[in-house]
Length: 189
Image (tube, rainbow, N blue to C red):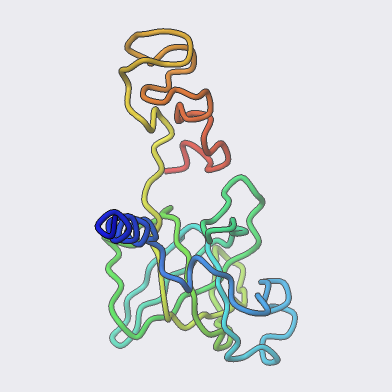
């Protein structure tokens, strides 16, 4: 019995793959709109923001990632089905490889709000809030098609698509992949 308890504890620990700073919102979760109203009043406040990478710039002693902000879900993943809320910059003293942090990738960051920076976007100059990187999480690509496999006994029949809804093993209608996470904005990459 002791072996089963230890094994189940290890399995449960292995399932939690998100850094705690990304998964859990900070106390007093500062919104983007509050921050841009008076950036100096909120200096050194910890924030958890996320969105889609627009650009990565590497300078001699720092890296800057420009992000198009989206609201976050309960796990900290950007909700691409919602309206974007503006732009912000992630600042890191370490090199962030643009081959890893690619354009249109989803990212969530936890760090201190350290001020703002002027950026020219097309012909418009904007002041963007700057978050000093403490923890960053690059979200894996989401595959909307048949999350649980393609062949098996499904809800409504046997066949290459797992029956009624294409579910494969388990085949409950909402586990077929196409219906499980409907709000992640397919085709954005």
